[in-house]
Image 1 (cartoon, rainbow, N blue to C red):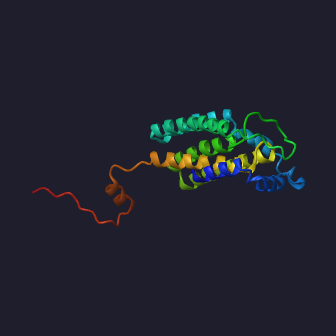
Image 2: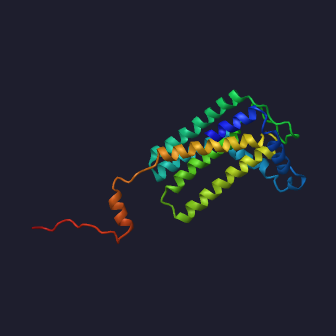
Length: 214
């Protein structure tokens, strides 16, 4: 969370203005308007409604691939992240960007980006569950890659739409990543029989057979 704190301090001291302006001008360059136009719809995948659906999916994935408590904890984590984001927004009270004409109108405060934070937490927690599942490795990696791309696009969409500064998005991503790492750490499952599991995974590992009769 040190990075988030540093960003908050820098934002409060108006030290990020040049960075925010430079990145925003790149994202909103005339030559990219058509290419990036799908971001208008992709951004909705980071909305509160979408993240609620992701929380429900996370719980269902936990039920299907287990342990179900990990899915429940994941859904709760997503809900708590949403509440924490609103508290930080109210504390920072950063106004929405006025660097350019926004494509859509958003109310409320700007720092950190809720879409960036919630998409990182929602899709990140879901990615943790998928990687721990018994799906084929290629499928797991493919799903996680798609989820990661969604997180990046949702964050970029907030700057492109003109409703967030780049530092809002960076803070949301960073805080969300910390939450996902904490979730992954707290729910990390340890095999109750690590030695047996190691032998099963590698038949070459020496083993002691049970003594025979007599």
